[in-house]
Image (cartoon, rainbow, N blue to C red; front, side, top):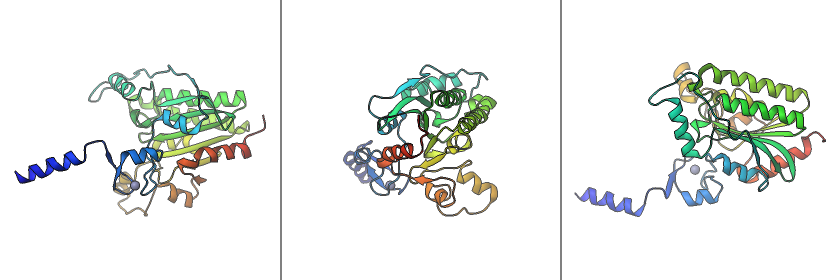
Length: 277
Ligand SMILES: [Zn+2]
């Protein structure tokens, strides 16, 4: 009885939703403070996942984002069903996020410079790569080439290729990669920004193909997750394996940039590297 009263009192003092656990330092941090720091942990600098709309606000000049293909939605080509049908799952994700799909694409400006822009949203089916994301990314790569614009894509995906679309998802890896290769050959500039987590089919295709690859601090980046690798090879992995800092040291990415200075840094890269238009 005494224990129950104690629990009740504690719960009353710490109502749900005010605190959150940081994945970086495992500490409880005050949610409001994290939000004030652009969703970055004030204790350890872990960068939390943010919605695509928030990313647009942080990275692009206010009011400049012009979305393309906003109404493109997935169909259910395989009639896929697990606990619920794929169609039901899509509806639920759309309702939860207010997005039609896991990627938003369009044009926008960064410090006055017009660019082609794409961003994936982890909250929508873990930012997984399905036919719609693949098609949207491919189209903006091709349009960046046609319109002579530099390309900036912010990627975050825990799911990689979307299993509910089977092989159709996997083909998006080749499709986006081929479009980026053509864009590259034509002299286009592509800046890829990796956010936590950026894994599997997304990382193994368009996310890793930037001329400059930037990552946010402490982001999990790789193909297969560390737990599966550990179980498969039956060996301990090095400290910080698949985190941004480890990957920078080993040459997989070019730079780590804090969210607070990301826009400035991308603007600087565009100024140095964007082909003259
Ligand atoms: Zn932390």
